[in-house]
Length: 133
Image (cartoon, rainbow, N blue to C red; front, side):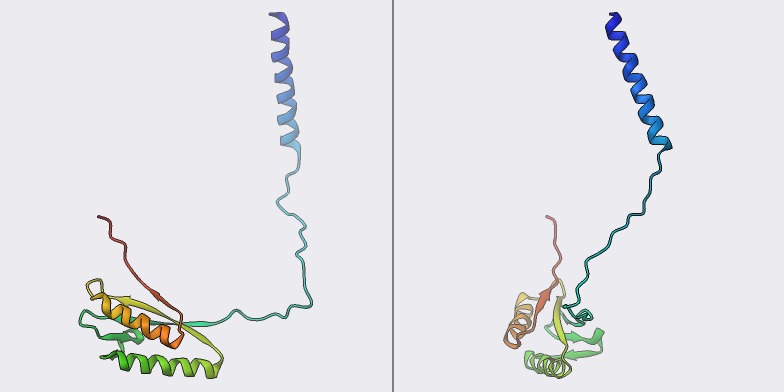
């Protein structure tokens, strides 16, 4: 009993000393880190990529430029995207297509836009909404 009480008192003394040292020590948030450098890799600006949003209405019309341009057929859309591809190639830039169909639009219109993008080798993404049942 006497030996057990002595051990508890020694632990108390050690903990008091530990917290004392922690409280008087200086904690610095600043660290001196030197990042590696390279003289062989040229600095290039990040690639600028334009995103062309193709909205699809309920009746299958294609909405572009925030609703300022409507195209009625897939042929018109293909011609428009082909012109954008040529313009981007001449400027040395890239673009991708985001397809945003109305939630009640038949899937065939969305797949037609995807097929046009595949034919013209344009990266694409299709916006969908997850519905919980």
